[in-house]
Image (cartoon, rainbow, N blue to C red; front, side):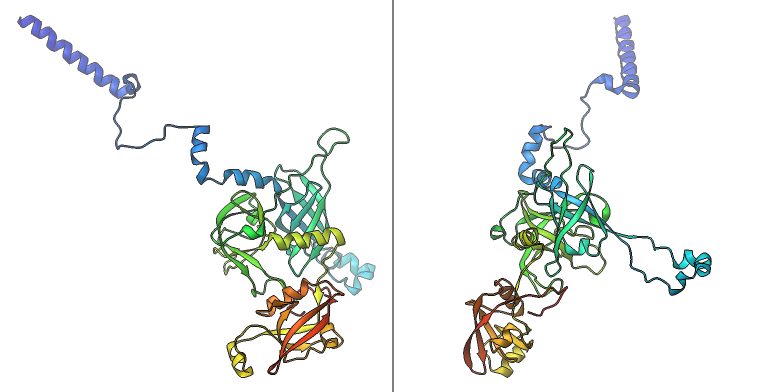
Length: 396
């Protein structure tokens, strides 16, 4: 009996020793039954099933749909330098030509654009291509194409480019460019999720997400005609001209400007609504320019102090501060000091609304203008003129 007990004790001791060695040197031999340090909850799905599970919280499909339609725009510009008068002297040119005669290195810029037609039309901001000598477009598949400027509208800060559709590989065939899908501005609401796609700081194609913070932002001093979508989706230098889309990947705006004291995004970005962008784009493609109505007045906002001094019931309307001699307004008898209340039956809340209403009228047609003159209400028919081309300003 004593001998059997000794054998048992030796067997247990050897077994424990072997177990200790294996657990130390080869723990995987013991299987995957090691207890977790803490209790974790893990998903049992992977691959496509996992993607389907998070589809409701992801915007990857919208991004995948839009990214091919957003391009990088590279511009070059040769600074204009006056020729030194002594450069005509061959001796002077021999000794100082390198300093005074060589053209300085060309400047460059970058931005973004949106392919709006399979035929090669691209929509971007005017300030992206302003004063550019050459424009090059880089597609999402890294192809680079030369672009020409079809036309531009500085007052809305929009421009249209055209690239030649690249061949598909077979002789005579063309590969259409991936045009974006236009959304409906009427369906956009404050609080809607939006995506901003562009090329910030030249780092490459990037997508940021935010919401629509406000609609109809104006009087910011950015453009002559302002009706911006405000968003907190990160927009940075280089994003200008890129796409602002809804959560389904439909274009609702062209990213244009940011409010920033540092040059980076502070959560206040502005985009031109797709309705405005489409109207300007179609006019540029059809006519090469944008035609707007004009009457030749300078307008001023009615402050509470002005309303009180004029004895007005409210601050609605636009105070006519000046009338250009020989303009349509002058011919219609509009005077400085008049208060414009309505244009073509549509109420005027402030000078920006006045500017938009007049610009929307067709040159050559007559429209009724409702004015307050002293204490009386006056109706004045005005024959609309064509707005002259001007870089910036609030004159109409």
